[in-house]
Length: 619
Image (cartoon, rainbow, N blue to C red; front, top):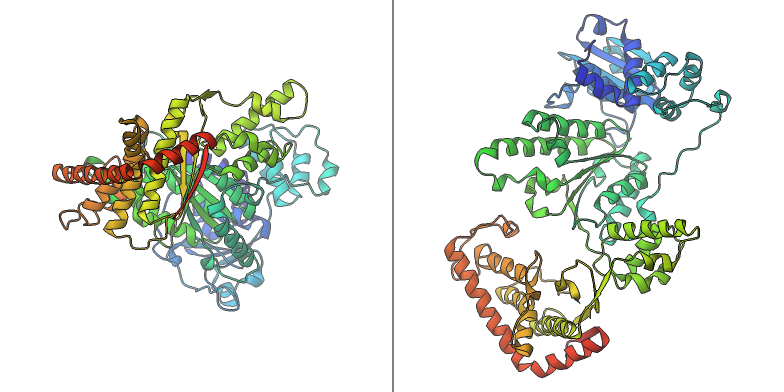
């Protein structure tokens, strides 16, 4: 047991008011014990008020370890246990299975009632102490180390008599001037924790998982199921601005949990980013989450954690240690009752497979740009529903490539415009702050229509889709690439085990746009390439997977994992030559088919020029 903490550990412990208050309370209660005075081995049972018990666990860990990271190979070596709450292991009757052992070190058991402690453990305990809630002096001390305004002992005493939530809230409040002591006897209204996930529009792909999670958490709180029956890890994948961070915040609010927000970049930026500093920062984030009664740990930029299968050179030792420690911490955290981990990334394929396996971040949700109805609902939400979503469709239907973050920014600007004119936000306010729209010439629109119709005809010819919807824009947002002027929507048939023929058909669909341009105009534009995710990018990557991973090329070989075909993949010269041959062959086949269908291609693209929207059904 550590009587004195080093300056770094003390700073970390005192930064959390609840933990610091309980650290003071624990030291006060244990000061007279032989375990505290002489660091004697033994079992310490502490009875703590239920509202303070999870803060007491965090404080007890600091007291027992001095803030130093320790490895625990089994439950018996952990220095602090909580019993009598939602147990990690329970019998069918929900009674915690506590094994009594004689430790070769000190161990603390925390319980909210002596009745929750088994008679065997009571007999085995070297000391049983009651931990009183923090006192007035503890409140004064906490405010001093937090650097907020001093408080007199009378007011601190009145604060210390309140519930745990009020004590913590008022302890961290910068100024208590004007606070009515007599009013503290009345419950203080808790602030609204909104937005909850159920309040937010969008997030369609994640809704089913969240609904099931909420039901399971409710059952866990009622002791109907153990924590091990709850889904606890999810990975959010999507481009920037699709609301991954907001999801973590709203999920925590939905469940009534705390949010612990961090990122791999934040860990790497600790001090000078040395391995020890990185691992310590990572461990601290996990410890913060697991010390709470319920927490969502949001880890952003998760792709930066690395992948052991691609490690090379001097950084392999560093990256291997980081990934290994992250896996250990994740496994341990998800076993702790009330801990949920949300990972967020733009590049799921760069994450080590062990992070994403069952039992860790096992649920994977892809967040795409919102659809027409969702865009209007998201903007209406950020406008405080001052304008109905249906009335916003005339605006949002023209913003098909806008992200949820962009919509929030648009709403802020519109509300600011309304405040300047001292009125309620309105449609004209929203229109006034829209990004500049650049009209496209008829010749450019015509080429886009031909390009998208070529994709559509190849999709129909593939036999993999029955209904295709095409939409093109008359204007582009300033700075937006012209390649985004058209959008093709179709649902591929569910091919659990696609054949070589299916994959080649998909390549021809991707090449259909640029081939259609050559058939109609005699030349091609840049519309098929130039950006990540473009037609050529997708076709090329699929061709590499075809011949270098699936063994469906000239040679029966495996050179690279299908999910590793990214910008970091460097193919061999013979593999590159074979891919060039596949793309050239499929482009010729695509062009030949579109030449035969030229009359239909020109007719449908002309309809698209007029209507800007086209639906094509399989004949």
